[in-house]
Length: 361
Image (cartoon, rainbow, N blue to C red; front, side, top):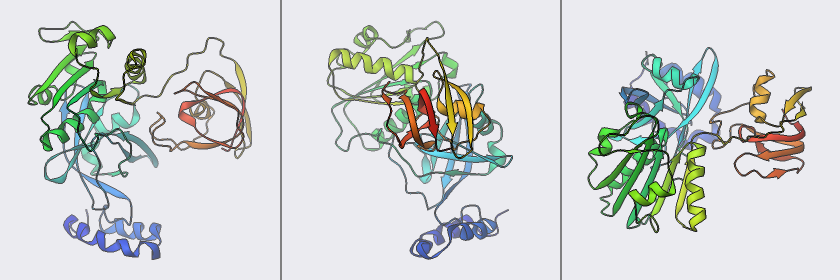
């Protein structure tokens, strides 16, 4: 139980900032957390205020961050870190504005997702979560255009909804269209809020069950886009979903030569290679030389060999798994580009070996 109230902690935190250059952060944080979990020199801890279910697969946590947090722009993401059995696990989620200066994060439960399962099952016992400062440029422009088109699949609805809430707060009067894709209706979060949003042309598109009246069936396609949003060209467009979903959207925009598309993916790209070949992976600091394959990411292969490199989002966003490649050829799975530069900084979660590779791990 905290020894001092949260209100007093958050009054004191701004007073510690001028002293930050003269204090050892680890010492301050150690004694600070004995008094209150949020009494940290720079790190941000948010208190869990409420939890609720959205659909059958998503839990929404309402959080109250300490005053060390600098806020966010709608569409950005934050690192959420929790500790389990002495191991810190970090994932990234898109915050949304809630009442009274609080924020919401929505976590969709994944079948093999350690962190998502913990946040679904044990959130009430956690009490406080560590969150990072907001990052990312998947945000609304300062000057809003007359037409906005949003394309969301699965968990991609979270940053999109954050933007819609921001637009409502700013009194936006332009044209709003949203194509929202999900496998099953009962797993799609925030449907009630979206259906009640004033002036929003919402199109619910189901990919795993039969559509009912007022719904659409099938995955994103150019033909479906033309049918649902005839004036898509010229709109400012924000698309968020799996890597495959955003790839499909980008392909349509590229084929038509359209501009104004911003994309963000919440899953890493995949690289399918028919002639998957053996390579040698050398982990210099660990002094280990191990067998690898060209068809998997360097992060997955390092973990499969028992190494534990730092990692976070596992999709090329947070840079936690940044590593120095001393030599060798690697492929960036987002772009398909191959690089052979020595002493190159790479992200392990979105990089696959093309030949033998030496890593500073």
